[in-house]
Image 1 (cartoon, rainbow, N blue to C red):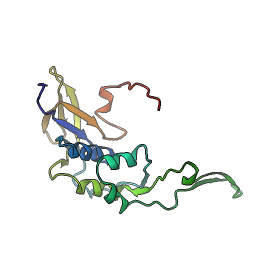
Image 2: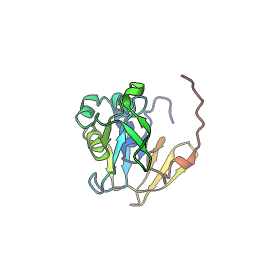
Image 3: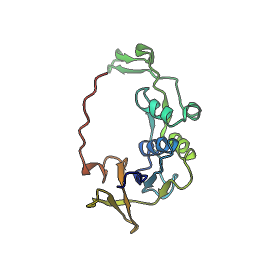
Length: 179
């Protein structure tokens, strides 16, 4: 890749992780393309709720500039969890006030809609099921999709779930950082 060339970035997967990364990049004027295998955002239910923690999910929402939008879809009530014996005796209880951290819940469908609403039109390309990724001699990556499209990107991010086609390419060891 040339020194001053804007890198072409592809994100594989239009779930919470992929869309959040795309939104954060967008806020820094870094163009990206999200490829999602579903044909549209309403093709299937997105699953249950997510708990967002301050050091991860809530931080990402903040970095995406979506704090106010998130407050309209988040549920801050009932953050306590308990483990009971078969006789109903409380064995364990966790409460947000123990560590002072809020961990609001949010429906995956509402979170996805919020993220999609914040995107520049055309960032997400629907109906693109990735078949393979191959690194080329110049260090770029060739993406082959089931619909026959082949495209080349400088950076490919795997946000495509448990059976990712992208993540097995590299196992990056990050340095351990102590706070």
